[in-house]
Image 1 (cartoon, helix red, strand yellow):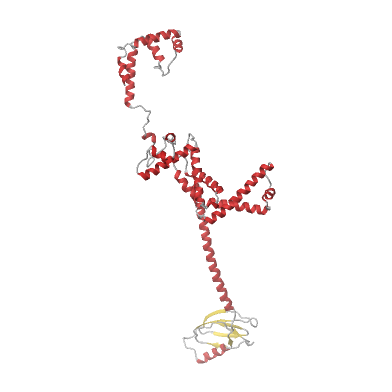
Image 2: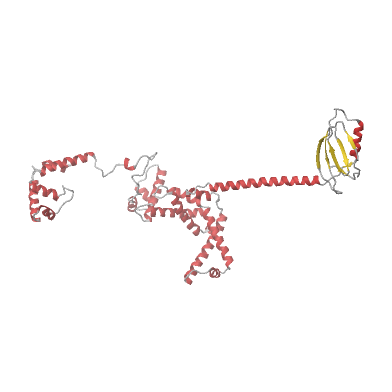
Length: 448
């Protein structure tokens, strides 16, 4: 408790009390250095045969030796009561101030807890952004656009107006460039627009902001469309990139006053950009875009007719569904397919190559190889019926030596005779070979 000492006597020894034994008595003593000043001192003393001395304006306590365990006498209690009666309790504002400080400390602690939570949340957000795999552009693109919500119809109208205003200012700049023969200054641009420079800058910034928000809010639409064209010659990242170009074009051409949503309108621009990129980049031999577009129409018609009828449609049904003539449909069906490497690994475990499982249509079978060997043997038997000069001329003439057919002039130079003489030798050899007895071994190969 708070106690004060009021006008203590100047005598050196105001009162002296000796207690044989006292119980533990907690109390607070206040020393008055100046009038009206209070100071709190916590004292918890175990008075065990202690002696209290009051000297001047100060209170001090000396420990005495322990005495016997006796109960305090009534005289000792009266002396202690008389001494404490001179002490007057003084209320202080310190207690109220301490309570206020404690309340403020609690409020500050609560505020610190809230700020720590918010800080941890922000750190988590920053950590989540840092965890994005920048080596995967598609995953990074999803991470940066996942927070963008879908736009409402009113927001699309507002953004469309901002984009159209931006395009109008850009067209004005192009006109000034053509008129002046060079890039106009910002002051000239603002004067041509009929506004001051600050207003022009605000309109440009607002238009850029509208265009950026319109595009970011619809990137997920590009990804969903690009997934439908995987595996046809381009990877998904390139397809998304081309689709974003179509999205930008759709944002510039969108007119909100027509009453339809932007996603419905931009869907066709995205598909057109993706298909055009496939026709230009996915094939080794480039096809015209109208042929590629007709190919997509035929594929979609076949898929739809198969779903509706439960069977594969014929060419007449496909032509009717696509609006193509039979001649045009036949031309579309003959378009070359995208080439694939024979060394590319395929299969569940990617342990096979197409070259290992696909038959080569130009490769010779074992039967064909054996037939050719027998034919060479029989042909040699027939040529052996000629004289050596005739046999050599026939072999050179038809390329039986090295696979290359030689002219009469070349054979004459090799044999050291004239071209005419080689012709005569060749004619004589042909007359002999026309004999059926000589060529009876070769008849079976002619019939085969």
